[in-house]
Image 1: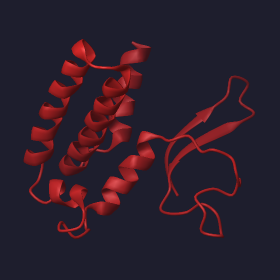
Image 2: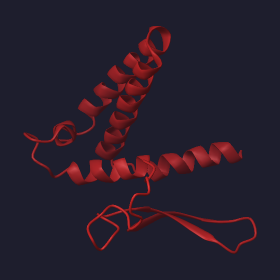
Image 3: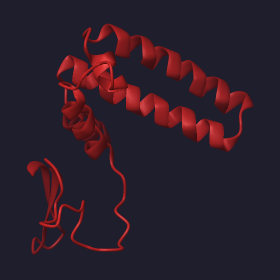
Image 4: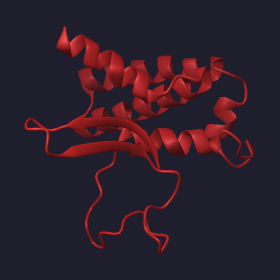
Length: 132
């Protein structure tokens, strides 16, 4: 696991690490050692999957196809998906808004990968803005 962030709680007796897994976390090959416990989805995990698909066969991986030509195709998809999200927000159902937002976030992460900019840098920027 690659550490991408660390936080100390208010009385400095607990440290929480944010990590990007390189694969399964459990020795059994499972994603987690906590059987039956739902693991919340996070964008960092999706970013790791996208990064891993960079070397995949473009014939079998949509993500690899998006990445093979640099940032141009992912940038086009971000523009397209932003328009679809806006249209859904104005005239669609809540389900359509959620689906289009998911598409936009995925394509934004592919664009970040195409540019070699990690999600952690975006989170750092948001943190700076929040604390300002």
